[in-house]
Length: 283
Image (cartoon, rainbow, N blue to C red; front, side):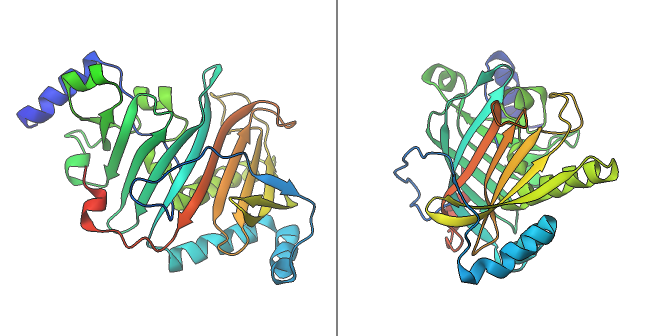
């Protein structure tokens, strides 16, 4: 370990910093003007004619539509930028609604999150695979700039484990679980576990709107036992953009009546052709 790395770890142990959060890309410029948004809107199941076939597929087999969306993503999307609107229940407290500029590149993989509204303990966080983002024990690290003038008096930035106890304390998702691909992967993973145990309930619930764009809504119900159980929520409401088939909003609840929110993740101002420069992923 380099002397600088050692100093950063030692300093990080003395202050409380938030490691990168998830979640979870935009046509905004590098420093966008963000406006807090309302949750996605649900509508009755009246699809436009172009979406009728996809809606029929979703009604027959919701996961078939999800798999189609993932295939389109893997074939067509290499990088994107958006505004991630994020709110999570951490312990018994629901966080403020945060707005984060999210930049994601698939090859080589990189996630850059820059807090714009209601930054808590982190101002920005960068994660890549390999190199300086792995410690000598093989743990994945993210580079984090702390929020707050006092913290920055001690250290400008620090490398922190993305799956360590501090990360889990301040976020339901790690930084490598941000974005569209990770949302697909998490959905498929938990659905497979629930289906194998015979408890998966998945249904098409009509159409809605996220950021002014029409969506298909898929609802999943699971036997949620709390944060220590095998499932992330009792009910998940997923919005797939009707054109892109990307998961542009996810809402997780601790109950099937949608009274207790666990997590809200909305992808606003999505830009699927951002043409990043090399310095767009420089810390």
